[in-house]
Amino acid sequence: MIDTLLPVLAVLVIAGASSVAFAIERAGQPIVLWSLLLANALLAAVSLWRMWRDGTLLDLFRWRRGDITLGFLVALGLAACTFAGRQMVAPPGTSADSWVVRLYLQLGPPPASRQAGVAFLLAIVAVTVAEEVVWRGMVQQILEEKFGVRVGWIAAAVLYALAHLPTLWLMAMPPVGKNPLVMLAALFCGAVWGFLVARKQRLAPALVSHAIFTYALTAQFRLWTP
Image (cartoon, rainbow, N blue to C red; front, side, top):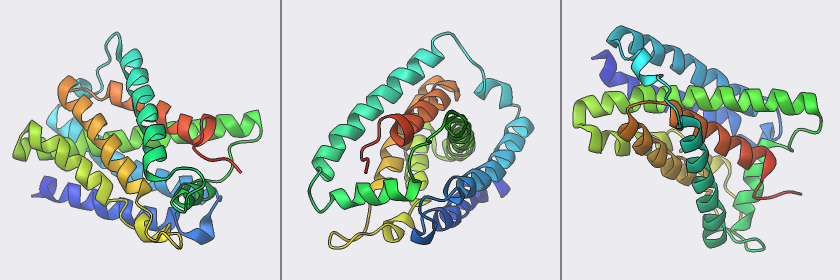
């Protein structure tokens, strides 16, 4: 019974954190990252407890040669898809481009100093690792146990996107209206990482991919700069 409620709990907690993180009055503030980190860390603790209880902790966190390379290549592919998708959904200079601008204004400028850059990198790694532990390490595993692997990773990606539903309204931009970028990214990337975990039955490649992809798009290779 408890396991059945955990995916719902994850959606509600992250939706609440998203409501805090993506509110316009908090644009560019540290609370954007910290609220997401806190919510995911709490859920990750529950996820780790469940893995330990079920005896799957060591199996899911098992590393093998090539995991870093695979994670990097998947991140590279996702980045390429993201840049291509931006040209199709929100090309620069169009009204839909304001969705991209709004997202990066919310995240704030990239770190200006080496010390700030290291802190930002560590925060990104912490958030992305916690997200993978929650969504692919707990939610996906529960859904796979109940509905099978083929349905489980797809359903987990859908729930991952639904958890970011508040961003649809919080980052809306006139005249184009509701902003679907975060939800679309969560759905697409969540499906890729979910498929990766379902195939490998390990979290390592997805952990690497998620961290590299997120850091690259938020710090090094932004889709928009002032």
